[in-house]
Image (cartoon, rainbow, N blue to C red; front, side):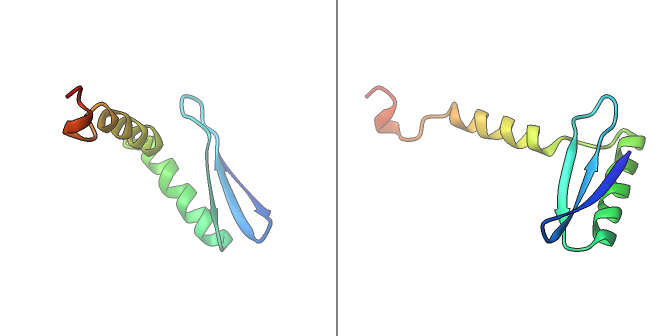
Length: 75
């Protein structure tokens, strides 16, 4: 379930749902925060939500396995 609060000069939306990590984001208007939360919760209901932070981290780590330069590859 989403909760909303005015933090500083922005609206913060927080989604806490069993089986998912806590997700937060900040918006300039409460309406934008509510729309984002509804969209994310809808994706979760349909089983279509992806944890993009984890995907990005995985892609960064897999890129790091490749040598940066052929000269640094033990030659």
